[in-house]
Each structure stands twice: as C-alpha cells, then as structure tokens.
Length: 183
Image (cartoon, rainbow, N blue to C red; front, top):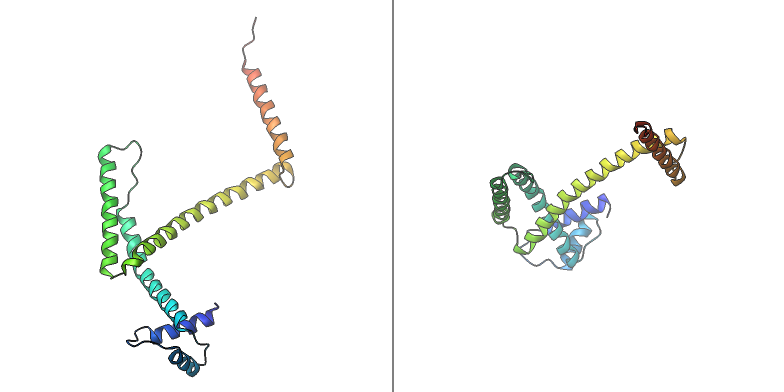
C-alpha cells in the first residue's frame, strides 16, 4: 500500500471509527465516492480500524514500557552477591507488574495484551540484534580492508592457507630461537 492509499484508508477509518451504528458497505461506498477514493469492504474497514487502534496504543505505550524497563533494569554479574541477584529478580517482577498495570490503565483489550508485549519485546530484541550485526559488519569491513592490503586483492581460502603456514612457521622459529641448547 503506497502512502497515498494509506492516507485514504486512514481517512476512512477516522470517519467511521467511532460510529455507534453498523457501517454498511453502501455507507462506506457513498463516503468514498464523495471523497473520490477507492472504497473498502466492511471487513477491510474492520481490519484497518483494528490496525489503526493498535498503532495508537503502541505509540502511546511503547515509550512508557521502555522507560519502565530502562529505569528499573540493572545488570547483575555472575560474581555479584546473592542479595544483588535477589534484588534484580524482584526488580524484574516489579517491572512486569508495572507493565501489566499500564495495560490496565489504558484499558487494552485482554486479547491484545500478549500480542502487544510480544511486539515490544521483538522490537527491542530486533534493535539489539541489528546493532550487533552492524558492529560485526563494521569489524568485517576493517578486516577485509587489512586483508586486501596484505594480499593485494580479494581474500580467498588460498590466502588463508598460505598465511596460516607463515604464522605456524614464524611461531616454530620463535620457539626454536628461545630453546636452550642441549649438551
């Protein structure tokens, strides 16, 4: 759906969103004809209204959920005291409870709760995973640049084998040089 159609669909949704009566196909068609836009079926309008409402809830709740998480989440290392681990576990429980309270405060329909929280989690996880991939790609580019300088062109497994042999030979020579002579 291109941006023009998205705007049209949003206009239709906003027009009928708070309708207290059933919205028939003929009513939708009449409105769309007046606006000179392609009409939706009642099913399409229902889907679009659901998506619009979901988007609005996500826009409102995402920053609040992230703030709860960031403000209350701490890293506890493996060798930190057991009391620190217990405190962090309690903090995570408190975060979960506060998130559920936000869902209650905004009267999120029960059948959306799991979906919304899964979406939030996937978004955060996706950002971290993407950042990790970006870091790896950056390091790979540097290594490829260094390899091109060393090998004079594209790196291939023949270069790898040759360089590995050189390294082993160098290590072996260094070992030999540091060995004490035997009598």
